[in-house]
Length: 73
Image (tube, rainbow, N blue to C red; front, side, top):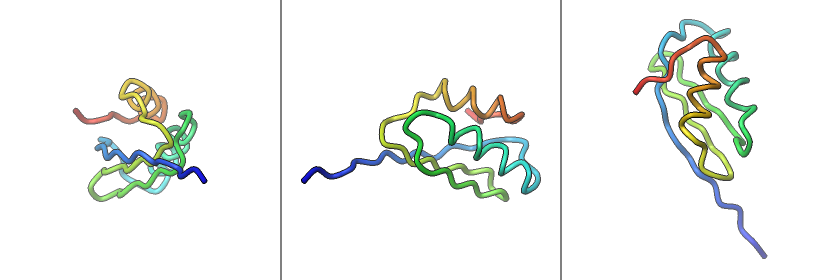
C-alpha cells in the first residue's frame, strides 16, 4: 500500500483586500500542476499551498501575478 506524500508551503501575497481577491488568487494557484489545496488568510495575506510535489516559486509568482497581485519576497 503506497502512501501519498504532500508538500506544504506558506507565502505572502500583497494587495488582496476582499473576498474577490481571495477567489482570484485561489483559482490561479489551483491551476498549477500538483496543487491540491489553497488556503488564503485575507487579513495577513498568508497563502498556504498543499501539493503532491514541490511547486516552483516561478510558477507561484506567475499565478499570483496573473490574478493581479504580488508575491512578497
